[in-house]
Length: 190
Image 1: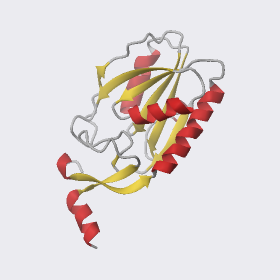
Image 2: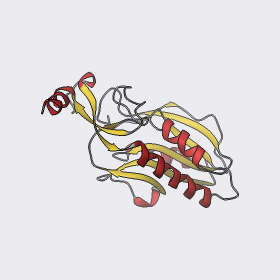
Image 3: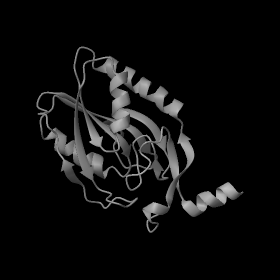
């Protein structure tokens, strides 16, 4: 999909349903509640993709939680990472001595996650864990840093539930595989 224009990319088949998302988010919330009993974790969401997941996750955690957000860019208007991560919006809160959970929409190559972990660890949190909704089956991330994981998915480009293609389709209630418009039309015709 590297040379395909973003306008020709459309949501296709459902990969993870709304019900499956709700069930798994509730399970992740219960795990965080148990693991952080007696503490008030700070959820750090990576914008824009993680905002829906983080909202639902926070409601599933039965503890006082605080929120902050970072925005990073490594994709621009493409469906492939540029290989360069830059912070577009930094945190407002001090992380020193805080229990921090980094909330990611998707772990793909691991480039962004590794960059964010190094950046946040340099701010001296008491602890730093990662909660990722989606993890690519072929990722190159050390399993030890993925404390909370929603779903393993194949290498297909996906949208919905906060994930986008060129800022579109974040509002879908499920996660769908992206297709080219001509491919979707051909599938509908058959």
